[in-house]
Length: 169
Image 1 (cartoon, rainbow, N blue to C red):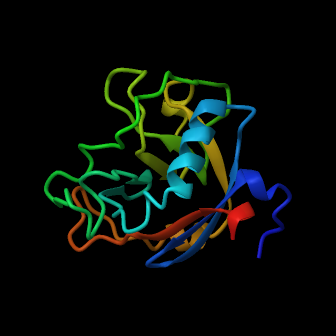
Image 2: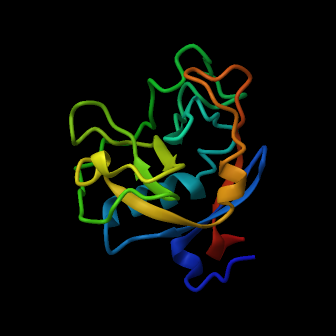
């Protein structure tokens, strides 16, 4: 297992494919890191599907409203259109590049619309640089991310089993 140097700023993401460990980057996107930890501590991501997974690009998840299996508003046809009941976040764009394993917030065309959805890059995606808020980097488990079922939308999608702050485990 990857060495966890800062448990308060590390996420353990258990998926239907296996475990992924993500180092959070509070110095890059403090409000986005705060939101990810807040939702993880509320177990909001548990059961949420990977609704948009594009080969050689990224795997997107985090729709805690329409994408949460077993949730009262779960709707596979609308997964990817919702967020949490918390306010949208102001963009925290940075010079941190979108490379393989980067975790970044999804948003609409409005730069200040990130809420709960995020994606993990399969490959370098320099066209996203300084346009999306990077909040983490996979430090273990990219081999797991690589096996997430592809599709747009995904038929019978993989999902997050649990997402926890390492300090709480």
